Amino acid sequence: QVQLVQSGGGLVQAGGSLTLSCTASGSIFSIFDMSWYRQAPGKQRDLVATLTSGGSTNYADSVKGRFTISRDNAKIMVYLQMNSLEPEDTAVYYCALRSRRRVGGLDVYWGQGTQVTVST
Image (cartoon, rainbow, N blue to C red; front, side):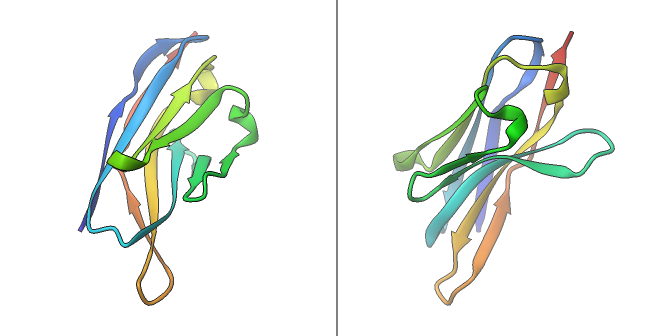
């Protein structure tokens, strides 16, 4: 059983910063990647940033240059540093972990979600 527990988030004024954290625990065979997604009201869940096991990163165009994904391998934690926040960044943010299976394929695990609200 793999669990992802998120922390951080909250209310911030436009132009401010927030950091989200996500800690994974449980039986993880091999991490493929860890990501952050977000879902605004009435919209689909979108990928924000990904950090692969090899250290490669990928960002949504809307957050490039403002958000940074990083990790602490020893603790199996992933962070999302969010700077220059805009009202359009308001959403529920989810962390996700993809783990390789011993017999091939991937399993996906999700955090509980955390609200980020950016006021004007």
